[in-house]
Image (cartoon, helix red, strand yellow):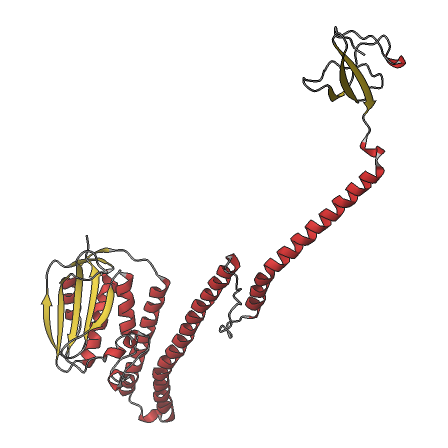
Length: 376
């Protein structure tokens, strides 16, 4: 017991002649307060819960009472309950997390299983797309779109290999037949006549091999050096290098310059001229000029036009002719020299230079129009 002056006036036996066990007092208007006090007058060194209660008798007298704090182990039941609850809660959280993750990854496992069964001979299969439009949904759609592109590429490759094999087989068969005939009757063989008979087939083989190599390089995107090329000058040079069997009408504007590979652009012109020679009745008109009004070219474009007076190309077949190994009629037969690669190569060269190659309307014949960006 502490008097209003803070002097201990009474204490239990074990605390006699000791200072006050605490110095806090209740805050008005409360008359009772409590606190945990450690390392005070208590000899055990443990912490105690001290309760201070004030009474009024000619001043505020404070009565302090203390009890030791009990360790948690004093309540084994509470400890066991807490441990059991913690274990159960941990197991529940782990099970719930595992169930959630397993359920979330089921669509991924289905995609993986389907991909494991897809082979190059069965590209028509697709992975399942989940209903929920989440990240896995977008992943499945991306995988299916990739499989679509892969199937198209492989189908194109198979068709290309089949067509190439067919084209190569014809001249090889012709050469073999002529050589076998010569072996059966060597005494009747005229070497010069045999060479003249075999040479067209060899030239055809060489042409096919050259075109296939060009397509391979274009497909691979082999880089090339871009230099300013005067389109009218290049057309004139290509025409001088060909033996023309048709009348050529030229309208070549000067100063039409494009940026590109001179050799490839020359091959583009050569392919278009050769195609026109095969199908023109009597006249081929070649025009080089500046063109505008095309939304694909913000600035004016260089335009090369090759027009023949032949039968022309039907509107519904104008894209078909740019497919590889395509012939629309007997005019594109092997005897006429058409392999079906010249126009596809020409279009790929134009596109690799940032331009276009299309067939436009004309009063008579086929009108091939190349548009390329002008050189800055």
